[in-house]
Image (cartoon, rainbow, N blue to C red; front, side, top):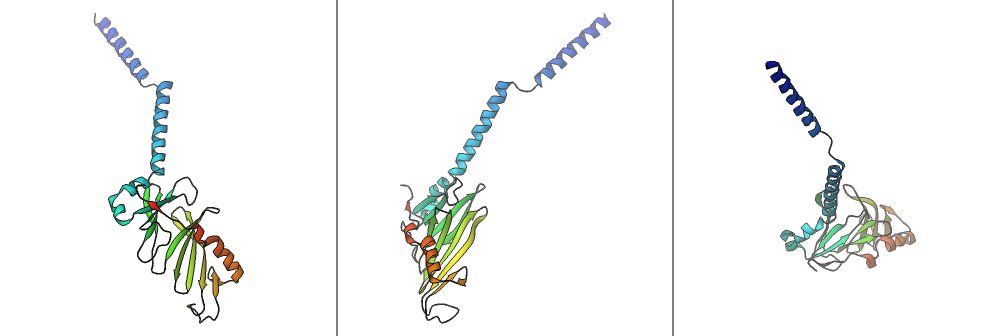
Length: 211
């Protein structure tokens, strides 16, 4: 009798062990497909969120208190737009106005540059080579800093400067002075650079937030 009871107990134990192994098998193809679809959906939502990061900034009350206008541009043409904010719809940012450039870098929103000054400043987006010109001027002088947007922020790639007679800070100049990357340049060469990267026709203008 005891032997029969032991044999029965062992048989039940083996059946339970077999059932446990069966339960630990890899998921079925249907289950795997559902998991893959869920993962893809989450990735898609994450991508959409990255592309629309600026919506939270524009909806923020603190942003609205400082700025009334904005512009979206994909400066480096990587598929994600950068956000320009301004206190005016016009491209020219003078002493009474200000503007800033913001970008999403790996989920972190950063302010890359702020402009606004007594002489006047503005940005020009150069679509042909995916660069951004920052123009500024003072009495008798004008300047361009050319940037490329890369990981980590704006990278300076070249500069141009112009001084009218008697306005060059290094010497009393009788004639106009043109500089490219800090070195005196031929007027024709310099004007070609200014035409390409300092043309007001390409300056960034803005539209009202909420329109």
